[in-house]
Structures are given as structure tokens and as C-alpha cells.
Image 1: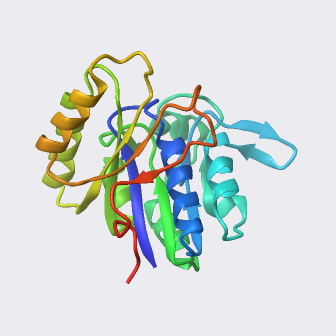
Image 2: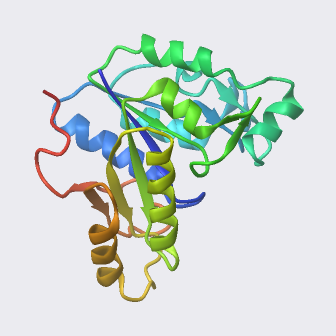
Amino acid sequence: MKRWFITGTDTEVGKTVVASALIRHLVAAGYLVAGMKPVASGCEMTAAGLRNQDALSLIAASNVNLAYEMVNPFAFEPAIAPHIAAQRAGRPIDLDMISVLAGAIEADCLVIEGVGGWMVPLGNDRLLADLARATSDEIIIVVGMRLGCINHALLTAAQVKRDGLPLKGWIANHVDPDMQAQAENLATLEALMPCPLLGVVHWQGDDSEDAVFEATQDSCFKIT
């Protein structure tokens, strides 16, 4: 099974929209694909327990049937930093448990969505990078295309490489329809990022769940 970890240049850059679109792209290519959102804050209490909309979106996009608790084992109700939410709930985020769950999933591909940006703390001196290291083969950076994205993208990529994790590439997500010089910013990032542009998600309006991942080359996600 190939496992990709989706991180972002910041929060609210459309990681879930991109991850869901990528899952649908892989499903359409004929693969068995599962999604995970191991840690999520800002969950809603339902009759079935705490549920996170991002995790539900990944479940809806995938074609591997998983119990919710396997997709989102650490769900917290307050929409605050996950390490603080975990501390308040008295439930530390267990990376070993998440790693076991990820390893138990039977699929061709597993798309794992992180929380916030790359340096988000998870508690007990652990960062999001440690979660990625425990669960994934390669890292994909979602770049929210808006003013300031070049700096954020280059800093994120540099830190991922500094942490010794392999970069599969980056995906451009057009989150701001009013961004000036979009084409020029995209070209600059293509020239400066230390990994390839894998695809583009165009503005769909208010984070539409119907966003389509357009691969930059047909072979970029072929599993061999």
C-alpha cells in the first residue's frame, strides 16, 4: 500500500478539499483508496459520537469501507489547537496507536490528512512531522494560492526536508479567486519549490466538495 500524508502551508488552505479530490482521482484510476484524518478538533457531537466534517468528506470520497473510529481516532470537540484540545479532554494523542490503525487498513492507497500546518504540536513534545513519519511514505504539500503563499510554501518544504521526510510534491489550491497574478505566482513556485507540482485544484466556490484534482502528468500517481 502506498501512503501519502497531506499537509498544508497553513490552516484553511483547503487540505480536505484537495485530499478528497485526490482520493476521487485515484478511485477513478481504478485503485482501492482509503482516507484518514487521524487528529481533528472542531468536531460535532452526534448520536453516534463526535464527528468531524473533514473526516466525513474523506470517507465519502473513498471506496474502502472503514469504521469512523479508524478514519478519525482522535476527535475533539473544541475548535482549538489539537494538543490543547487533547489536554483538556484528558486524552493524549497516541501516535503508536494511529500507526497501528494505518497499517491495518487494506487498500492500494491511503491518503492521510494532517491538521493545521507542518509545525503544529500534538503534545508530549510531538509535532505533526512525527505523525507523518509514523504513518506515511511521502509528503504532499497543499499550497493555498493567495498572497504570501510563496514564502509559506518554501518554508514548509524546507522544514519537511530538514525533518528528513520525502517530498512527493505539492498541489496548488486556488483558494482566493481575487488573487492577483495567479499564473505568475504559480510559475514562481514551480521554479523554486524543491519538488514537483503534482496538480492543480481550481476555485470551485466556498470549498466545494466537487473540486477536481487535475494531475500535471498522467503518470504522477500510478502505483507500480
